[in-house]
Length: 192
Image (cartoon, rainbow, N blue to C red):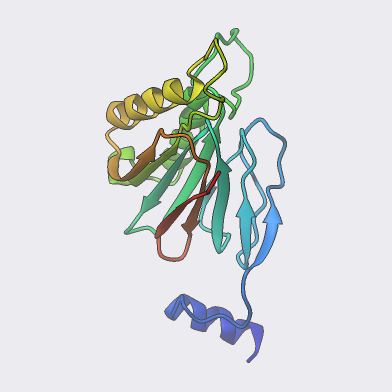
């Protein structure tokens, strides 16, 4: 089947594949937006990275105390994901946004969805992560996972996203995958 016919068939029937999607590490530094993603690949987001658009076959990330938000617009079939490490920081004027911080990662995603002519209230969102990854015998706990979860809830409420899936807290890592063809989100808890 010629490549153009395959693309046309995939557009009409997203389940049609000539081969399984290739995997690619995110092509950006740890500070934010991943700019280059190929249509036939699974994009692996690292901590502090985010993606918005429609290009990769899927987006995947692995979470501990970090939190991921997935976004999906069912009518426009665009979406994305962010993977933040900490809830927020004190940012100096003129300092660039940094995807490692939840408030800044969501601000960057909001800018991109507005450029796409959409509003936050039109997006289905999933919220995952925030595990307590420190052992029980550690005397001083920073509760990073709990703080990340609280910020996630706040941002979802503040911007009016449609929350459709949640799995937060506990003490197990999670793998999250957003299928960019269907908007389906799969989350798997890892065993410790």
